[in-house]
Length: 293
Image 1 (cartoon, rainbow, N blue to C red):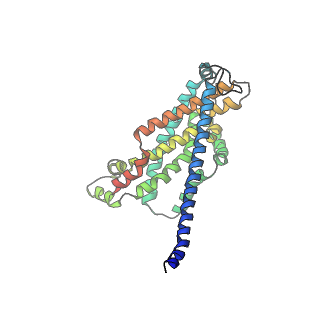
Image 2 (cartoon, one colour):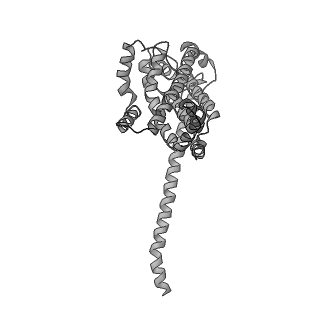
Image 3 (tube, rainbow, N blue to C red):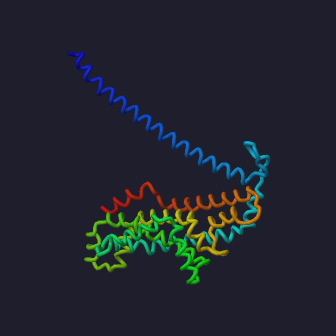
């Protein structure tokens, strides 16, 4: 009898062992992929940073010497002071305008039902799903015809096309989590629309707003296509200036271009550190849900 029990139990035990082995192999495969990606990423960054400080680096593990002259050369040659000012102005304006336009629009879409709402939501998705170059060329044509192409405002308006819908789509779930009875109670006590939004809704929505604007900030800094199509000589952001440094006519030292790439990475990192000083992504959704209830 015991032998029969063991025989019946062995297939189940074998199946459990195979599932456990498969789970372990899957975990090993995932971690191997992650480690491989991280090593490659840090290897590329380390190579660029090392090259930016190298006097000469050919077929050796380390450069023959070290110098900081490439940073001074890149700063002067590519006029990085002006480029950084334009980058800060463009990114700051896009983040601010995206919030001012996107949050009220998201509230209207979350609280109101009207014919064509689903079609409108689909239209908001298009700039996020379609490659920027697809709609960037006709958009740039319109901006140049209206005199805004090649200016800072042209760059800002072009970047608002994908960022405002992005803010709207991120904010709608945050708004839908807030009980409408809170708004009704505020109106009973005499709060107007503006006062209701500023004193009641905005504190509840603040985690979602900060999350959306943080993502807009990162997206705008890295946005190349739309900025490239609409920027002029005096309205280039850092990513476009880096592109011209690599592909423009003339011979440039690789170390000088790498130095500019390091400036770009450091600038992006500084923006992120400043933003994350006020925003904790791991607590945004939890905090929003807690406040909504």
